[in-house]
Image (cartoon, rainbow, N blue to C red; front, side, top):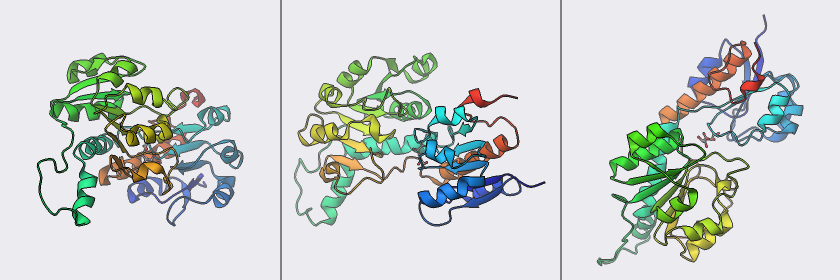
Length: 325
Ligand code: 8YV
């Protein structure tokens, strides 16, 4: 019996390949980055499954893949995928929650510390030979211990950041669509409105998915509500924040600064004005980039894909409405 054909749009870790071998007939883009669009669309012609990452799965993608049964996203956020369009065609969409929670929270908390204590700026200061003397105000930053963190979206990653914050004696506020009584009890987190969170927090940390409700959630109005001493952390999706407004907020000192792992456009163009600001710490979307996390994502993405192609309900099905047995 022939195995279902699968296209893997970028090179994934051995942990994922081991799951695919013997279960599907797969081809993978072996070069750096992601398969270019023209090649990708051709490869999809006979694919029943695809593993995607930073790939837009839209009508064009789906049109090119008439036999597609499953799109397995290598990542927890799936704003790159037009889920209603996939569902309309009966295509399963899956993602990789859980395996990346702690690594992503580690990175989020690193950004809190790095932005507050000016780590990147201090590193450049030293290496560029500016450290010629000592004075009592040298690289003085913001206190983390005992400060208030506002978590926008207390999902798995938001809660993991909150656990770290608890260890730093921080007061935890959160907002979101639903109250989380268990998290409130275990973390001592207080449910507030977004406006109250913005007004009260020393660190505003974004953990919501990108969708129609959250696109541009943090704009000029919201940034102006934040404390002048507050820092915005974004490890969710760039488009949750109005980047132009954030530039004004950081350059005109409406807020103290920002720590960003994500941008509206990725890779971020080097002429992005935010990159010139000392009070903005920037990273190339590496939230989940730890060994265990990336191996876990590869294996999870592959397992979801294989399950769907074997007629078993994938563990992380995003659109359960397509699953009829
Ligand atoms: C990934 C992420 O690096 O899981 C997510 O939502 O943002 C990151 O872990 C990226 O999406 C890879 O596709």
